[in-house]
Image (tube, rainbow, N blue to C red; front, side):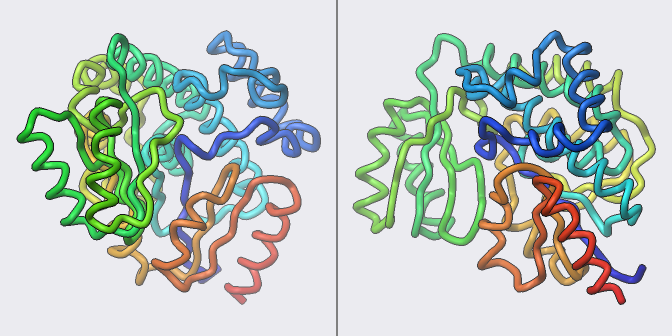
Length: 314
């Protein structure tokens, strides 16, 4: 098939109780992957994913839950439509799902890995009142300059997620973020709002998590990438285990260059396929690209994506 696809994978914030349930109810493969992930980690994923609970919002559970659902969605797609992407790209946590999709990580190894990643992030933030804040309506430089000025004044705030034009997430100490809200609004931000996050991702506050994550990565990563993965750190592609081992620990303390990655590689693809719950990345991409974007989040959307991609390639 001549169609050129990019595979996309969401990160934290896309979770919701019930995600993946349609796959689980209708696929033996999905049931087995849930069982294998539960056995490996000791997490009851049926309970975590499909019943009301508080754990799904805790990063050590959020991360493996999102990755597992994304990996199931991709596996079911791949079994029906074994096409190699031009590249795979994930938002933050989603970069690990992207690595699963190109063969660099076994899916269950990856569930265990990001469970550890979540624990390390929580431990790095323990004892600190941390959080994240979204700024809407300001350009990158304005937000960067405001944060730099506040750091010079002793505050701990960093721009960390470049999601879309005019949408940047800032991480840091929560009282400092609260002080930042009126400053951003005075600069004509359309909105500045604290997010429901228990960690401060992609900033220097997570420095203690990088070494133990690198150690685990060295154990489980394979040097068998079937397509490039776009690094959140550099917005450039990588294709080897050596590069992944260098970049993934840095990802914990570096901004996510998501919108830059889409802009740099949009010309290379005909469509995007997002695997997992929520269609968050479709929302971010709406203003960045005119290419078709399919979300595989249940059996119906899986069938639709396969049919429409076949039509695009015919």
